[in-house]
Amino acid sequence: MDVYYRAIPNRGPGRPEGAQWLAGGWCWFDRVELLRRGTNPQIITLDECPAEVLERMSQPRAPLCGSDWTQPWIMGVLNVTPDSFSDGGVFHAAHDALEHARAMVADGADLIDIGGESTRPGAETVPVETEIARTKPVIAALSQDLGAPISIDTRKAPVAAAALEAGAVLINDISGLCYDPAVLQLAVDQKAPVCLMHSAADPKVMQQNPNYDDALLDIYDFFSAQIAHAGAAGLPRNRIILDPGIGFGKTLAHNLALLSRFSLFHSLGCPLLIGVSRKSFIGKLSGVESAADRVPGSVAAALAAVSSGAQILRVHDVAATRQALSVYSAVITGQEGSA
Ligand code: HH2
Image 1 (spheres, rainbow, N blue to C red):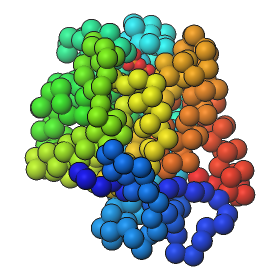
Image 2 (cartoon, protein in one colour):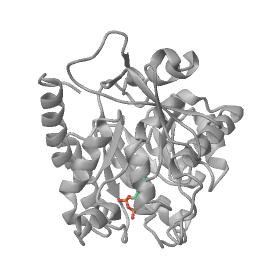
Image 3 (cartoon, rainbow, N blue to C red):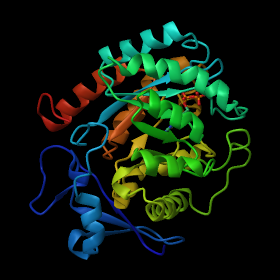
């Protein structure tokens, strides 16, 4: 693409006449940033923005997984793995996994994301049978009475199929439909929504010298191409969630470029998910070595994403995020219980 349009999000009082709601949600905008490769950004008014782009930015997103996207959702992370980067081994036993999922829902999680393969930098691929054995029984046990929808965090069609059969309702594919082509066909056949996350390469090698022409715009183009590819196969845009994949083949500068202009991705017309929780960029910015000690930085980054209109926050620390979100939203809008 030659030209990219980013709604500049605002919240709270002072919304001017003529401002539009971003994705039918809680942010409004009355200015758009025009971006081109190799040139300085330019600010334009809504009148100067093409009508079809404005429509994509502002139209309410189609309901998915029980959300109408008028409030940010908290996705609680449940890693049923021995080696995840921040909580590996903690919830590996089925009993601990069930208890933790229920505790996250009690703490205010709207959705639980269950994964059986660590995708931390340098991680080895886990055999399909192992991944199914870790995730399927937990999903089957939880889907009866959890009180929140479940997503399966996998790149592999057989794992996703087993999870959907056990009661999961969303496929969270960190390869953005690039690792296993059968994931797309499965989503089409099962009419399942997909979270399409960008990853520069396989987790094993993704942090070895990640390189972009322009990380923000390259990832926007990747999403555009994958939405078209999915649409041609029968998975429509209104069943796709997008996630730029913080930390997946990205330097600190790449992550910050993506987070500071995150609202660009609303121009693609899909709900947006962001996973910043406990990630290494927070350690780099704050000097905090241990992933479990990065909760304050994680919450700060999550709130910033909500102010850019992110519809789903993927987090390990549900209670802390829920408390921060309630206070932040009330203070910024002047209304208790607001999004
Ligand atoms: N991050 C991780 C895993 N899955 N999915 C989406 N959509 N977005 C993310 O940012 C994302 C993700 C990595 O975090 P975690 O699951 O805690 O670690 P590990 O991969 O080591 O299990």
